[in-house]
Length: 281
Image 1 (cartoon, rainbow, N blue to C red):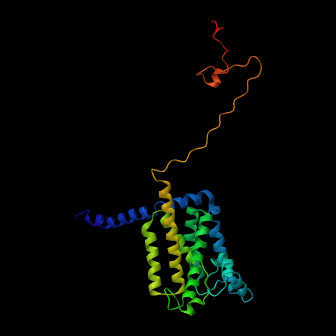
Image 2: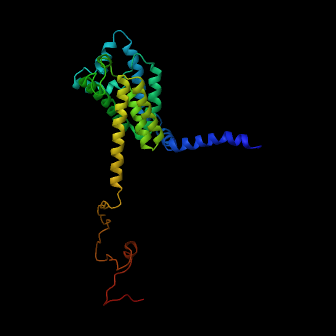
Image 3: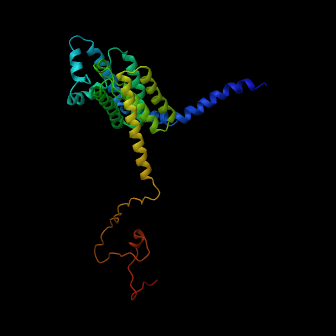
């Protein structure tokens, strides 16, 4: 009975530590090693995103520059396709005026930072743009299908400006968790998006769910490709033939020839012999 209290208290803590090590034990060490090795150069997209969100937040609240922010990065479901595609890269970092900017910066620092240090910058940017485009495509679909169609939204929900990094943040969280086999984390994020759509059926929630669906499909395709490449019956890829090492050419009548079975560095210093003229001791 004397040691029962601390052991009962320590058992949940031990299970929590084992769970955290199983879920994130490979993610955070990899991110920390990359960050220690390269410093700020490991997260250029994260730093640029934070600076961009803060700068665009100031510009869109200034009377003289608010219109320019909307013209360069404002995406609407009623806009032409070519205009939405041109504005999509900047729209990822245009914050929603109704949301606190410090929350967006915190999301960028945590999620973009971990993704960029583990997935590298090009893949992080590609995943963020893919998820944002998936949300934009859903908005266009909802506008086309109408409010009474499958997953259709009321017209007033589709007239709002569709900007911000939230869809990219959710998609990067799911992709990084699947990449490092943190299955509980990825399932929790996907379940949270479903609950958001059920309780708050707005355009942002549906776009988050569309980004998650696209990223899960991409992850499944990558896993299938890896299984195909690692199939035991698949013949190995032939390696290119190795070229023979360069040897110094023999010059003059006193050049030595290597004898059979003798390594080249040793045979080049041995005198040449023939069957009719053996070397005498």
